[in-house]
Length: 343
Image (tube, rainbow, N blue to C red; front, top):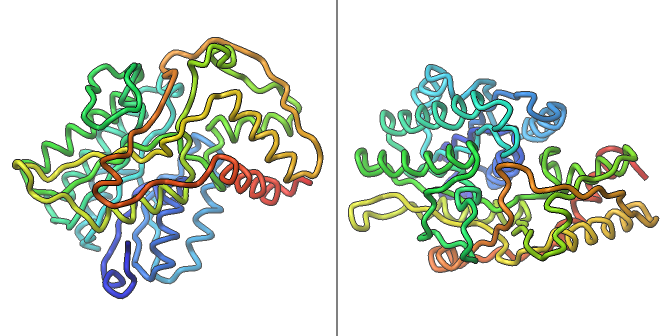
């Protein structure tokens, strides 16, 4: 785990620092006394005011420095590496969203491919102790074998977003081999929690309730038990990242690159998840909440199931996410009602 005594003089470069995971990671590092350089372009893919709130929360730390810019701008990225000489880089900047990649593929190429290439070039020209980067459970595509293991074939992505994340893993592996950059890919599984992303289902469901709209339940509501997700609470994600920061890959079989699943290892059926969310929101509001629902077919690019094997994670850092969906969603609905002043 990050130790403020040994790490307070190290510089952590976090891309996507105003994003959901980037914010929570930056905040945790700053609370431990570390110096964090945050980069974000503050794009309007979702409500920018949430990103600004996150940055306001980070700005209270003297050891936080924010730079507004895009990782696809090579001059910006290289300037940060040259000026701050970061010890550790955590690349969390990316154009997110599976369905949006059908509408705006250019954004994914620029951020997820060109941007990640620029980060790799920064690590090559200004050597770092460890590069960690966000991959995604979406790389598993429609794999039938569950739980998903890091050794499974991931050669059939079904969305451009997934293809860019698989490409990131290949690019990192190549740079690690050629330039001896210790790097770790993080395959996140459906991350949720306070100050989360409004484009995620759990957030959209609560938004819809307060707007008196039906929630869209895809794959016709999971009645055949074939739609489920491995929901992972944000605090578990951050703890896993921080433990992995301290364990850069060693040179095994001529590679310095590893990939890990970070998931809850306890997938929930969609309708059960919705029932828990209704119950948690009812607790937050002190009144019964039942969502209006419309049932629709699964959307192009969506995968029917995600289920993480975390054996490799446990073996390497002795860590297993343990926040139950009930506790995690209760924390989210409590935050939501407080943040939007809804009672």
